[in-house]
Image (cartoon, rainbow, N blue to C red; front, side, top):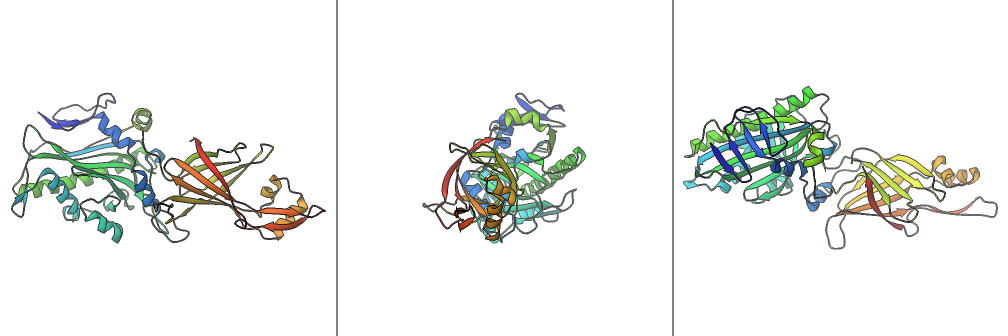
Amino acid sequence: MELAMGSCFVRQISVCTIALGCFVFVGGSASAVDIGDWGELLSYRPDEAAQTKLLNRKVEPGQDSWHIQKLERARGDVLLESQALVVTKLPAVGGKVLTPQGLLAFVRRNLSMFLDGEGVKFGPVTDEDRQHWETESPSNAVVELTSTQGIDNRQSAWLVTGVKRDEWLMTAVQVGGATPAKNPYSGNRKVGVASALPMEGCILYTRAALRAYDAPSPTDERALADQSSDLWKRLFSRIKVWVESNGGAVVPGLGDSESTIVPWLGVAKTLHVPKIAWQDLDGMWRSKDVGKRFAIVFRGLDAPCEFIERNKEGEELRVQIPLKVIHGEKDKQGQAVATYVLERSNEDPEVLSFYDFSAALVQDIIASKPKPSRLVLKRVGDKLTAEWLGIAISRDASGRLAEIKQPGDQPGRAYDFAPEGP
């Protein structure tokens, strides 16, 4: 028996193999999903506006920023998970039979009801998220979907994007704040409805491509995979009961929860093909000026980056510097801009000596209590621009310090940056 499901289908088979060719088969009485669907989830990134809006969520000074936990920076292999409910007769609410899209909207708005008593903490994370979540289009809402019964009970938060009438997507994020815990997962999940032709009704489904973010072992990865699939299995079981209790009907035995783990390296080269750039920063970026004065190796928002300066002789100075995120910045058109600041100390003898200042001049500069030099970075789309605000000194006839101008006392110098590699 086969049921059309857009570009994928659900059918009864008794195969328990992994095939990264035309289809991915996941065992038992299984679901077979067009590999293109997994490729979409493995490659999906929220659009630039959604990313920037998340990055610009306000936190107190010194606190960690809100950000997406990137699939490619996670530790584990890939969990491919699917769950489907074949609804042959749609239920009614208030005497009116729901459409497939109406069923999807009802499920979303009533997830708290379906998950009540199931060992799951669910809800929009902030009041603003609640306002978004309860609208027709919940884009940019962050919701918590945390298991309280599994191996890892850390907060699992998800950014809702890609909202259409018949589907919506969720991307794993880390909530900002003073002491945020890592989300146990990275990756994407889609929830949607598709045609059940030749029968009436629809298929309510979810598919996910996830990686355990920091699980210490393959055993822990499997436990996290079971935790995720068990949560959604219980949710779909509750939805099935509700559908049948409200005049609907479901095909028994089809759409059971399925999950399998495949090696990340095996799918990354062919199926992880993102089309949207990350709006936060990762990898190496180098300034495009003739001398290529600056390079920065970013390692995510929650880790120091390596700041590299090059002098006229081509020598390089490398220092580790925390990356600061500036929230609420906008461009001249009022659009949100992702803004970052690096501050390099001017009281470090090694830094000052790198610019060929004499030992006496170095001591003079340090005694003047110079402020840190700043590189202010702005990310718009795939472009990274910066302004360098450094100190300027003048010397007297003996080569000692005559005057120092602090960063910001004079106009900065503009730089453009380009990615150079991972």
